[in-house]
Each structure stands twice: as structure tokens, then as C-alpha cells.
Length: 445
Image 1 (cartoon, rainbow, N blue to C red):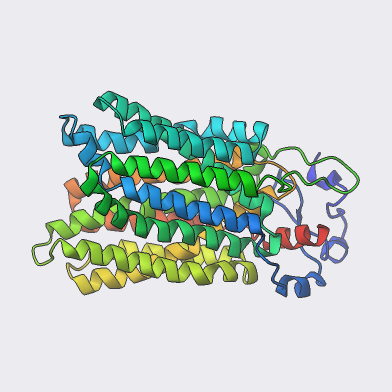
Image 2: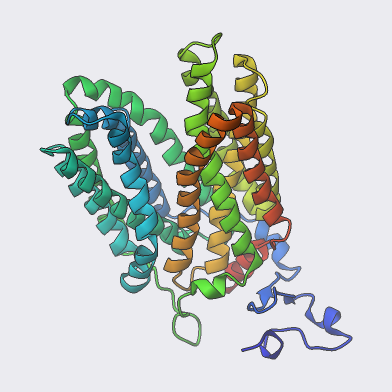
């Protein structure tokens, strides 16, 4: 139905602005009308609904998953090398996981829409658990490579399903806090995991895989029990549940287009290029020791964690767009300028800036997706597209910046990454604010 013929669209008259100000705003061309909260909703926006128990269960599961992933991260390349393969082949085991996450995302989104978020979340956890446990008993490099690829498929299922569950279960006015809690669990788990993995490595390469597999099975069991009674398919008053949000319909929304570009930039910079460039840059700097890498990475993680604890509330109170514009801009500065000076103090200072920006991005991006999809309909394909954009950036970032280092040096590689963050900020200059959608949705509950 065209926007101007929709019952909620503004009438095409000179009085349109007066008649429609409390109920709607002009949408992007071809998109459905976007509701804007009435003035009376401002007071409701100040209320802070409690985070549901089911969200806390997902947060706990995320912490366990992140710890487990961090446990196997330090030993995986060395385990692959134990099969008498070279460095390139060992690196391919890590890449196989990321590549299968990317390739399976569209199919995963359709499965989530068809069978539901809860089932696919548990299925994804169990698939990763089985493939990881089997990897502990791999007899050849080929077996390990295939099993890690299967783990990537399972990872896609539970990652996208987790986003969908957060969309369904989080109160619209607390989406920022819920996303912040979930992101913090992954962050802190990712810090604890590698330390435990280094300790478990003393028991052999296979022990961390078994520990991770068992922890995933436990997490799947806990989620199965505590989310069994969760209402994931609310029925609209006076009618059936809304149809799924198709990707082509979501793409008409400027907020979704902007968040996809921002997700690519976040994946490129914070999950890809930064993780490869910083250790290599420090290793090439004569006056810096290997310990500097751990210091710089820890400073970034600490700033990220501190920012996450605050940004979730700001997303709910200030809005999504301001945090995304600031976060992407701050990341652009902190990352783009990192290669200017070969000094530990400078690298730590830039890591504080970049970490603070990264902490603003994660909850704001997830909340925008939740606002676009809404809690009354499924959006598996839409959520999968968002995840694909971030994964694609994480894969391309290290590869492209690695080539730039070979051609022009580290300074230009960091500058390119800063420019990619700038591209994400530019996209949000044209993206709409979605906080009003959540306020209207909260009033309808």
C-alpha cells in the first residue's frame, strides 16, 4: 500500500503538519510510515522497566559462551600446527569458522523465521558443542577444518537467534540497557577466557575443546529450562501476529541502511583490522616490547567495558542516532590516529578513545535493529543481514589493511580503518532516529 494511502499517513493538505505532528513523521520514500511518540509519552520514557529474567539468562549464557570461545582461542592455531601443517593452513582453521558464519547467515535467518528463535538458539549452541567436542578427537587437519566450519554454522544460528530473542523479550524502553548487559557479558567473558585457556593448555591441546563443549551443553540446558515459558509470539489486539519483516522492506528504512553500514565499519575496525594491526605494529616497533601488546589490548577492553556500562542507559534516554554518530566518530579518531606515533603512551591514549567509541556502538546498533523489527514480528533475514555486514567487515578488514601495510605502511592502514568508521558516521547523517518507534510500541503493550 502506498504511504499516502495508509490510514496512519499524513493527509496531503496544507494542514498536514498540524494534523499529523502527534502521530507520525514523514517516512523514507517507499517505506512504511514511521510513528512518532505523542508528547504524553515523554513521561513514560522516563520510567525504567525491569530487565526480564529471560534476558538475564541470555546474558549468563553469553558470558559462558564468550569464556569458552576465549578458552580455545589461544590453543587453536597451535593445535592445527600439531597436524604438521604450515602457518597458512593453521590460520585457515580460524578463517573457516568466520567464513561459514558469513555464508550460512542467509539460510540461518530463514530457519529462525520458520522454526523460531528459541529452537534455533538451542540448536546452534548444541551444534557448536558437538563440533567442538569432536574437534578434541580429530585425527587429521582435514577433520579439524570441517569441524570448525560446522562450528561457524552453529555460531551463526545462536548469534542471530540471540539478537532476535533480545528483540522479543526486552521491554522497548529498556532495549539499550538489555543490549549493554548482553554486550558486557561477551566482553568480560572474552577477557577471562584466554587466561583460562592458557592454564588449560598445560593439560594438552584437546582439553580446552572439551571444556568449551561441556559449558555449551550446560548453557543450552539452562536456556531450555528458563525460556520454556517465555512468550515470544505476542498477538496484536484485534488480530493475528504481524507477518515477518522481509529484508527488502527493511532496506527501505534509512535507519536500517545506516545501521548495516555502521555494522560493516564496526566489524572492519573493532573485530578485524584492530585485532591484527595492533600486535603487528607493536612487533615492528623497536622500542616496544611484546608486553606492550597486552597492555594496549587491555586498555582498549577496559575503556570499552566502562563505556558499555553507561551507553546502554544513554541509548534509552538520549536516543540511538546521537550515540552512533559520536561512537563512530570517536572510533575514527582513536583508530585512525593510532599509527602516528610509535609510543606506548600514545597507543594507550588512542586505545582509550577507540574503546570508548566501541562501547557506544554495540548497544546502539542492536537497539536500532530491535526498533526496526519490533517485538511483534519475526525478522530473521533482517537480523542475519545485519550480522553478515559485521562479519564481512571483520573478514575484509585484516586482509585489506594487511595489503596496505605492505604497500604504504602501518600509518596508512590505520588511517584507512579510521576512514571506514567515518563512512559509517556519514551513513548515519542520513539515517533516522528510531527511539520514537520504541516509545509507541511500549504504549501499545
